[in-house]
Image (tube, rainbow, N blue to C red; front, side):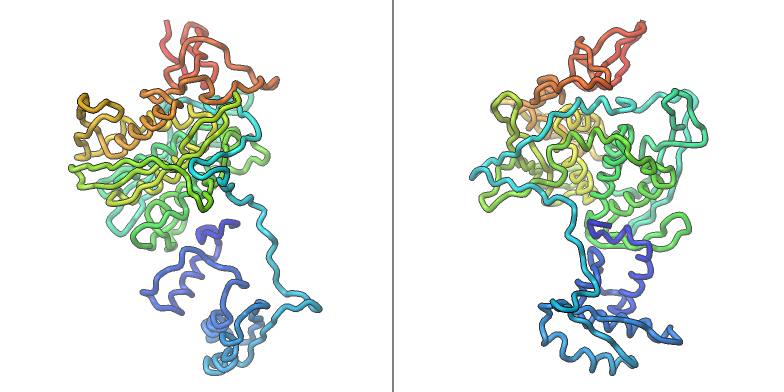
Length: 476
């Protein structure tokens, strides 16, 4: 894969076995594989020496030596090859006359945008105004399936136990509104079991909301972000469909890999040229990078005595134009430091992507869903944010994740983007209303929708209906 993550290599199981054979079973595992041009000459020789006893004819192997490779690291290469029992070894160093045997094209991915506009809070420029992103949702919440739905189950085995991972599926519906039973689409993820890591259920709940959007590429971006989440230690886990052992940097990456595998089996990314409404609404695909002057950030300390967690929540912020000649500050990334469940690093990774969607109704929806996330024996008392000194009061929060969601909503309220209930203060939040798309029905003005917060709730067929996100309210 272009991002260099090990999980996408089809021969990675063999590569990990070779690595353990060369370095020993207790050697620390690298975060990713490297290319032939990034390997040292000695590593090339060791690889040939490892496979030579298993080859009964000959081996054609060229050690690719970069132009600027230090001679001190090369001078003993052939002596090492002779000591390893090799019959021959070829080396090649590119030059201006003969060129190079191997070359690597420049990456096509755009580098993360730098924030160098000012000494403190930094500014990003916008190229276009998107459509309200919640209109891309197939359902604003979990659909009511009166006949039930099928769910694929896999037992995830990690160093501290085993838990069940479920991927819920519904029959795909075509343009003619008739279901095709032969094809199914994943629409939710959840975990179950006493040995699941804390915080992983909140991650699954957030991914379920992404699966309900009409944007498969957005789901893939989320899973790509989770694939490299590092935790305390790597571990090996049986992987579907045959149970071969695979190495993962942590339980979040392992869970994301299983979800990706099931999505691939269901053909979620098989449709080429599909629309990407959520991706198109992002003001930055990668986390914006700061210059040497840095940028402003908002931090708050969290203590959950019930679970003995004490850590700091930090929101990195950036300045965006408000569509009216001014500017407004928006969070662009979320992070934790201290003593907290490591599965929350995955939650921070995907919520950071949600924060970079221009329409703040998107992140508002995600945070409101997490306000009710509860954990067994995880509830605790903490101060309500936003109250003046002398008026502070405490209340019970169902989990650490729920309190984090409340704090983030409060920061958006301080910035004038969301209200304290997590709804945008303006239609399309801080942005101008985009021009209507002639190929898409424009939202109609009405009452405020309880789901997306836009003033687009009308009466349709006897029921409250939101023309922006599709929410169906009371009927009669």
